[in-house]
Length: 226
Image 1 (tube, rainbow, N blue to C red):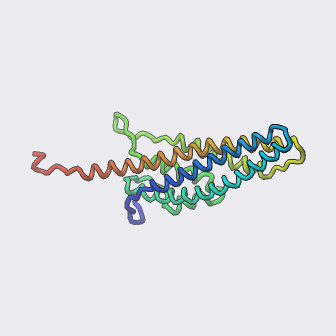
Image 2: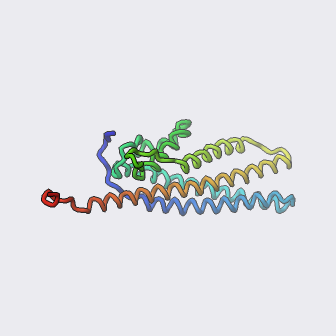
């Protein structure tokens, strides 16, 4: 592959990955507490149930704010991670940095491209594995696949939940249970997201350090090879 733009120098996005980690942990804590609040709302007591719903709803608002902040930082991380791939020796990057970011916002296209962008970052941020016969081995994207599958599940479930109204106590209870289940899925997806971002960032930094070490080793002269 030939890059149409000048290769950018490697710039570690570790600071952005740390910011994502802090924001994501705060979001996960908010989700856990929100789930506790909704669980309290199911105890059947009118006052306790009302307080649980208010508590859970307030934490959902906090979670939404944290999600927005995390998304902004994550997009800057995606931009830098894609921009770093050529400097790491990748010849298989199919996205420009800005194109990778926009892939997450284009309706319907983002259902596929978001996964492709993260799979590219995950696989191209590590050296290709070679078997004993010298053939390159396919690099797995298991964690990306699981994360993206949960993301799609959350989007569908969130859409269904947002278009569901409760007309009596039983339907309200079912809606609260659905919210708890959805929160649990969010928590699992968030944990996978953290592992994925931190893992990809570590791979990029380690690969760059390895390349720098190799460059610092002096090449043998012609006389030394005689």
